[in-house]
Amino acid sequence: MSHATLTPEQFRWIAHLGRLKLGDDELAVLTRQLDAIVGYVDQLAQVDTEGVDPLAHALPVHNVFREDEPAPSLPVEEALAMAPAPRKKATGERFYGVPAVLE
Image 1 (tube, rainbow, N blue to C red):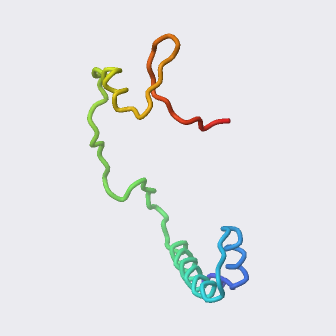
Image 2: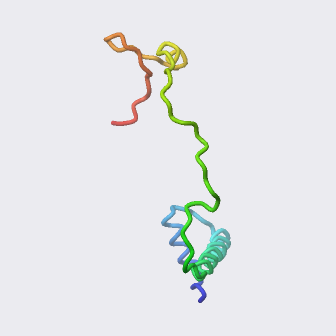
Image 3: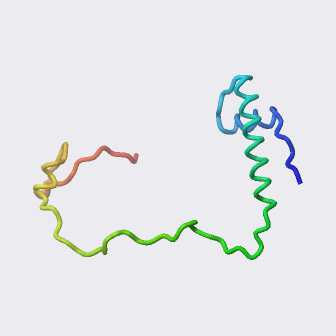
């Protein structure tokens, strides 16, 4: 079973959806390349995978991280010494000042 060939008009629409501005030369090259990719994916879809268990990863994966155990924190004064603009509340508590990201 072969896939339908991707036309330049179809690729132009795909480029439009992706907000890509392409020249005619780019359009021709990329249409052929995307068509080849779609053809390869079509080949993969034809592979019989009956009885093959799905994998999350092709190789065995082991946790290489250390145990998450509580440890003493950095003292506030030492942490704030590295801050570009530490701030102080009216209560005297000091904290990091960061630009607002929400309206």
